Length: 124
Image (cartoon, rainbow, N blue to C red; front, side, top):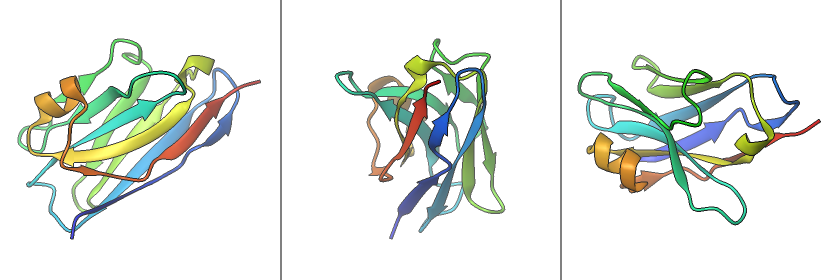
């Protein structure tokens, strides 16, 4: 059974950093790409960053390029999202997801499996 569990969210001041973790089980790192998405109140869920399972290529939303970094630890089957220079507009519930079509997942926010989400609040 595929399971995705996010952790690492919380309240942080603008300009600070957080690292989110997505622990995956029920599949190996060769099976699925993993992506991070976020949903803010009143906004459509958007893709933040994705990492391919085949070649490690990455996708980032323009709004987070240069600030966020997605990485994958295949030994632990965990994907991380390092978020630096956080802004109030980064406030949202962050979800990780898994799918074998990384481009479709990123551009359409569609995936076979989803985690429950973790809240990130950026506020002074």
